[in-house]
Image (cartoon, rainbow, N blue to C red; front, side, top):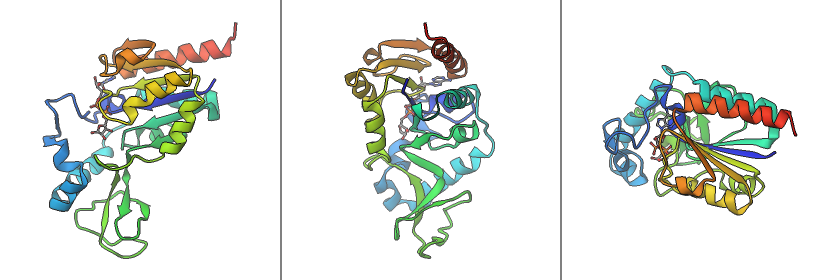
Length: 234
Ligand code: APR
């Protein structure tokens, strides 16, 4: 069975990583458009860099939770038949043990050089505008996909959705496209669809089934059920 899992901020919430849309539209005290657009960066690069520097530094203080670990367990069982597509820029899927993860909105622990386009691993700050290890230009920005930019890995994602038997969306509000449209693509491809989220998402009616509650409880339970179902074909 081919399974595509889409994750959003809700899967990392119980690890202590703040979500985007659960607190009056403010994201750690900022309006998203003030820190997550190319225009914001052109206007106030220092402010945007410091915002992401703080989030990068905060990653050191958080740990994957039961939901991340459950998906790694599912990956061990399904191998290449599982693809995890995440909108999250944290590294909690990987630290939870998963390897088949596509970061469609980029990664906090990478920097992108605006001069030579290199994408390099990065753990320190960028607000002091360090030189690119490749070309030396002081043009490194966070390797995250801002509003108005094209998400990464779309070809591979579309291909996986077209051959999926099951599509599961975890901890995402369904407010941001193209990810919000994946459920429709999976449905067109004939996949079963399931939403696991704290509350009904904006696109909840598109899913054949929905379970509402905390990811740390719902995801391990769902993974147990699926492994039992696939392990005992009847
Ligand atoms: N368990 C499950 N779901 C949860 C939990 C939890 N413990 N806590 C919160 N949620 C749910 C919320 O109910 C909400 O529906 O997770 C969802 C988080 O939604 P958003 O904050 O909108 O995050 P996300 O959907 O990932 O945002 C998409 O928006 O700003 C951009 O690029 C950013 O990738 C991000 C994109």
